[in-house]
Image (tube, rainbow, N blue to C red; front, side, top):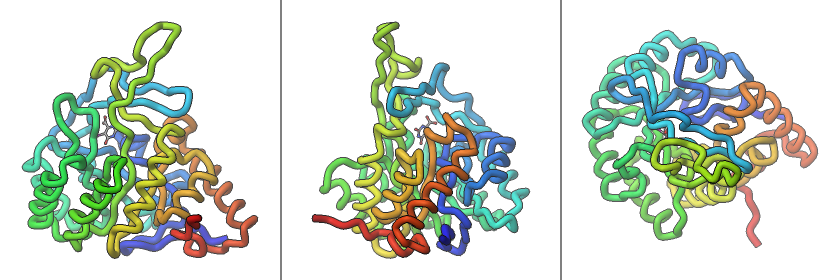
Length: 310
Ligand SMILES: O=C(O)c1[nH]c(=O)[nH]c(=O)c1I
């Protein structure tokens, strides 16, 4: 079976890579993902200046996944620009850079710098960080999203993508798809970011499990799989000529198969990568290959987007 996927001018031997935020803040972590069976690498969302992030504990494993309120800790965009300049693009593993400025001006400054560096990496503009106290997610404000993207495409003329929050209403799917469809250079969306502001409670300690925001944090893992699949399928259906990258609840070949069946071009692994380590990429790849073998599919295109309805 052939697990490769070519899209946006990049070729991936394996459709699996890390979700931004997991195993991608330092060059050592990024190198570990690049050295693994992952088919690509994406950096931790960056801001203009380095950030410490929220007080710890800010990540916790939960019975069916994870909760995090990291607070956008990162080394600052110049660190990731430098990593991208030194990245071995000939390695065949595309590098994606996640950008998540605290303001529109920050985003424009960072995007101009990445534009001027003229690197083969692709930008994933994060419109969906749920963990900045007092800051609403851009992705939940359709007018704000349209304004940000209008300003972005004025300075950043290369293909790029956006990381979207989960949506939960057909009207919202349609509204956001309409905004995104008006930007031809926006070539992909990554669905989904964590399901924002959940609350995990430990009944033994009768306490929340993370410190920031009185315990509120973004959910990942099994908790979010059905929501992730719905967002992948809906945006695959509603977007014109754009790719959808699946993220949310992938921990085996089974969920990877589901995401691709729902329309995903490639898939990102977050919670499972955090808990298992970079070995998960080879394991999930092999499990996906076994499922394809069993079903008689030779390539991802044989079943991509072919989810049956009743
Ligand atoms: O708290 C974070 O750093 C974070 N955590 C998430 O779950 N999604 C995001 O986009 C971000 I920027």
